[in-house]
Image (cartoon, rainbow, N blue to C red; front, top):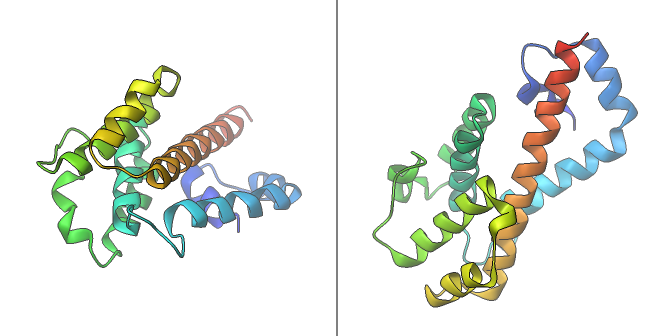
Length: 162
């Protein structure tokens, strides 16, 4: 269950990191369960698995994490409907679909400036036709990606400080 975190930490991964993650096996199991719940849930609602993976790619790019971006891009290309969204992989790409663009804009805001979110942002999503349940799903996804990025960055710093 710690393999993904070790992969995202990268070249610095060694026995010390593996031991640390093993001591936190419960936390790593919850992290993995959360990842699956937000990226590949059984009931995806209006946010397909490909869209969720696309949001993860774009978030990783905005956060400047190349390893994470590569991981999520690989995941994205394994989704059956990724061809419909591949033109939006670049974090600055936009969609002509108002619903999709509202989702991407909100995800970008939650990635880069989560503290600035207001009711007006939710109102924009609702006006674009995004359901209440999908707004919650989007917030959960963004929160997980932020957590994962901070966890990996912290582990990388620990490895560098040895």
